[in-house]
Length: 262
Image (tube, rainbow, N blue to C red):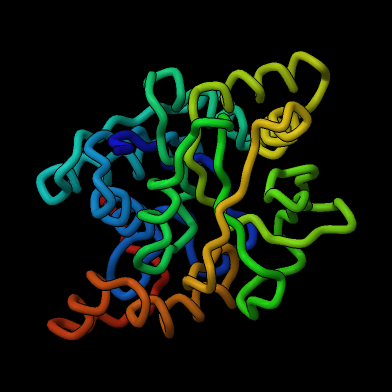
């Protein structure tokens, strides 16, 4: 059973700036994306979460502390000194706190019920990382920002990145990994790569140690721009149980995109 997780919450969120100055603090159905991520991880058995912060770190860390009484998990934060670096640096910082397989998610991704449970249940017997992927016909995919995946006939990753071609799947932003993923990112950096998560994934793919888990049509969404935020407001409660229950009990319209934390 996977009991530990990392949430990446360090980025600037340029594409959502018109609606929110901090993506992790942006509200969907009256709940911050950070809280949604925490609750979804706890729901699949996670008891310890490391949140990697950078941009708006103090506000995000304040929100994390405020959530401690409501979230049944130990919550830690790690702040990056240079959050302008690619997201693989965040993975390295978070993985230093963990020594067992962990779930890895982005703070701006939402996952329908069942997706993370399915990912967490996949064995790591013959790989070091499992990536949740989806079919290319999902209408919620943003082709201008998607990370594409090319696999062999055994669903092992051959290539991954935003500019690869051809490809046959899309990265959903959820991973089951060992610390070997962080080591692979560090190795890619040492070889002259910028240090993105995809750089580390490609390193493991080259070693045939990266596989996929097809989400099989389960809803998910990358809340990366105003259009995606509007889609999240309209659809998330239909696919995420605790949001559905909350909305039914006390609808909370989101008019400003985020809650200000004092």
